[in-house]
Length: 360
Image (tube, rainbow, N blue to C red; front, top):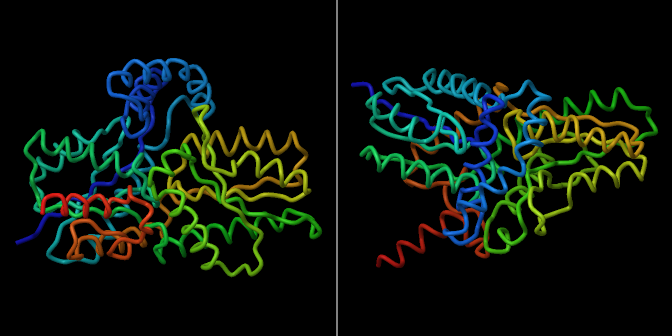
């Protein structure tokens, strides 16, 4: 009898029309994982923040057609992953479902679809390479709530992160190498080229509270650089997309662009924490930061494309999915056991162990 395995892919989501921008932002800024204030304050404060950001966000989305391409790109990844999985596992039927965090299809829509398909098993696979309580953690919480609400209780395994997975690093390294070669061909020989591995930032207090995201981003950069055949590569990790006045982790991507311009060094931006094109790459990197670079007289500005449905990335994701399924653990990292150092108490493995200890 064929076993049905539902693979649920987590992603952020994005507005699919100009009128969806405001509710998307409300969903984002009223998430307890994002806006960490007392519960009685969050609903009105989150709506106030969303209201203040609507106009600027709509202007940004207008640059890329008034909507985010993230749903279509994620569904393309889902179909490619489904094909790869079904080609290798006779006796098992895989179907991929998309669960977005802040816009359709939400976790409740995905959970109902999984239940209607009559799956035998569920694999939760984040499209966030690095774990953060604000991304994967929030998505898992939303999935658990949605599943409980409809009585979906199936054997479930969760992949928490794949920041230093060899297949992911190699697939990403190939994209960087190709973009590096293209950029190098367009630059005069005497102009140096620096790779900026740019990740979405986080407020510093979230990291100090134990979130492993920054540590994992740095591990990703190290793994990708090690997989590249570019000895002596000039590179740095940096962080973009600051949205609140509090102190965020750094250095900022904008500051690194300005520094490179002052040193007359060209830059190649690699979105190291995103695996799909969306507003942070298509607008923030391609338009806003390019403008900053040109204003400061940078000798060259280039970008590595996001993975999208790149064959190497899909192959790595398929391997990660199989390993998650066949792991003896219900919660596993790309390497199986916990990878984060002890000080990262928001690592989901640390939380799971704490719950077990409390129960005992």
